Image 1 (tube, rainbow, N blue to C red):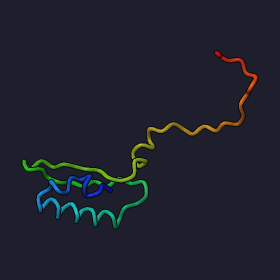
Image 2 (spheres, rainbow, N blue to C red):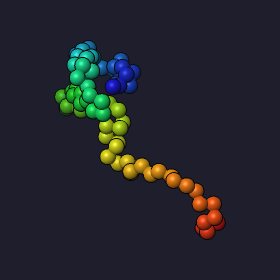
Image 3 (cartoon, rainbow, N blue to C red):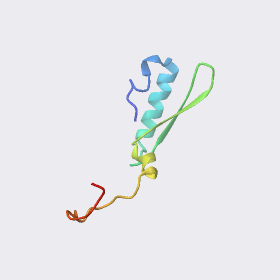
Length: 81
C-alpha cells in the first residue's frame, strides 16, 4: 500500500483525500497476501485514474524463471577460459 507521501496526498483535493483514506481503509481490511489492490480516483477533468498497490511479487512472479539448484562445481571442466 502506498504511503500518503507516495500517493501525493498533499496535492489532492479534500474530496480526493477523503476518498483515498476511505478506499485504503476498506482495502486493508480485505487484502490477501500476494494480491494487488485497485484504487480509483478522478482528476480535475473528470478522467478516472486507476492506481494499484500491493507487493511486487503479486504481478512480477509471472515473469520469473524457475529456480535452479546447484549440486556441485566441476573444478576440472574444460571451458572457454
